[in-house]
Length: 280
Image 1: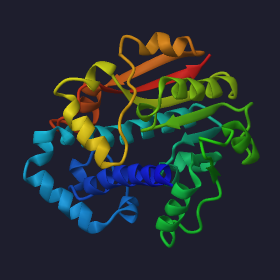
Image 2: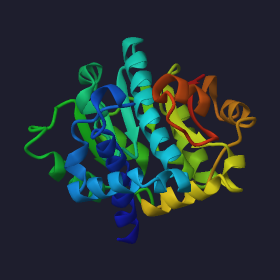
Image 3: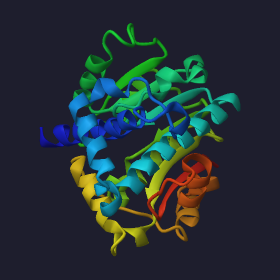
């Protein structure tokens, strides 16, 4: 049960960042999620606003990670829209947590969406959305998976996943908590059980950023959400690492590009990036 609680805590922590973002004036938001408040305590949102106003987030470096979370939210949404318009036939959200993009993006309504996560997290999500997104859209299918015991492929196929279709895999906020072997297994599944041209998009951090003074905010931020970062892939390693696992057409969207595209003068953590790669 401890793992279950950690997963919900992490999902709730990311939703909290989205809910805090919604308190900004609309023109100042990097991303918007009108459902985020359903997953968090409003008093926690107000408390975190006070913490931010006192400059504590800036001093610890948490602000750069919170801003990254919002830029990540928007950029992956843009990748989703682009791939759906280019012909993706289904979406698999690995570690879906409390993500709501597939409920908000009109393009996502045209294809099956498989939200993969622990059943406990999914039950909490359903409860939070009750009365707001009700009935839950028919195109979204919950695939409950206990990653320690269940076979991902079996669970997906039972839910209607078609390995012959061009698929978009959204793998947000997951890989940094895995071991290298765990990341390898997931990529092997994607490369071996989806059509050529399928795409995976995921975020990671340069392994060099996991040490030194810049890692303090990362440790504070992730431990507050119930997890600890265990894995990063160097920017000089990511392209050959993906190529060796059956992926090409790799695009790396780094922290500087995210800041320019979505954040303006708001700071962002160094070393974070979003990778998009295509099944060869």
